[in-house]
Image (cartoon, rainbow, N blue to C red; front, top):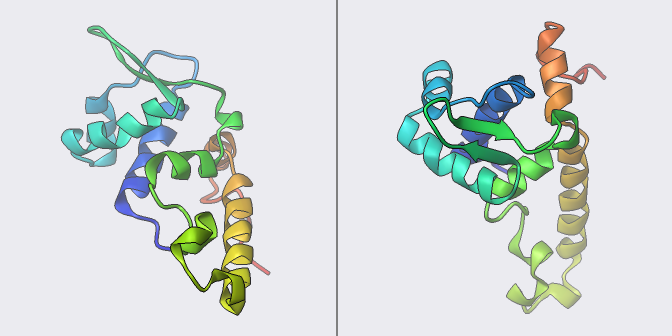
Length: 146
């Protein structure tokens, strides 16, 4: 699976919004400046986050975006689902009707298993955990050492 630019930038944006959880809204211009992402592109990225109910917009001079729920309740899978129109590895995993060979396809079971494991991985991290790891000076909430 290749994580597309929309997901990468969307995750950076929602993490910045999550940093301010409980405080004033975070503006597009603040995120744009701090993250080095075009404001115009950010608007396109934040729109599906808003439609999915992950962030809420607040209008006005001091408006911007806030998380709709606690950062500990929002998983990376929630963010990916909101931003990626096709978050599955292979189209037949989500919609078996797209492939006439799915019933006799040995590889289909592998794709389903791999897709399930990836979703499990993405669901295992919350925005809150990522922020806590960053606050503790860690790059990641997990150890990559085996």
